[in-house]
Length: 214
Image 1 (cartoon, one colour):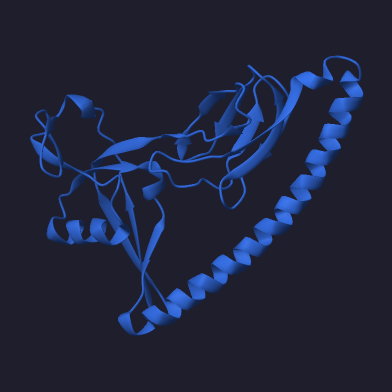
Image 2 (cartoon, rainbow, N blue to C red):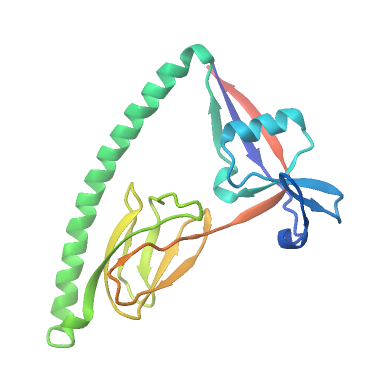
């Protein structure tokens, strides 16, 4: 039997985080008279330990940390779970490779159509940009939509947050994902880029929901 725990913030606080008074573990909200713990760099285990100590917990989170299952296996099954996770990750990597190959074929078709449409019109102005997309903690972001602004050219980041796209210098790339703020990045002479998405933070009282699966 596996315990599944989900944390959420049903009623986000609208107080300005940057105007709160600093504390050892976060900030103090003078309006709510509460200590707000900064969990944006915390692991699932650290968050759960803090909640177990104080069920009236108020915290600040990255949206991607919320509304998802944090699976806590029994100790005797922990080794098996780690092995299973490794196998799942390996299979997932294989699927991503297949998808990347399919995407590569699609991009090749798009590039051919693009070349045919512009023919003699400044072909040399279009270059291939390659990059890796990161979050604010320098973690690669997979599955993010990447689009050249005001065009139909788009792709997705792969398992390692990597992407390739064809555009002109000065064009703007738009990165979109449900757990992050839409982020724009202006292209310049550097064809190898490392953009970062802006995290979307939520602050408020933590609600924990726990279920068990057989």
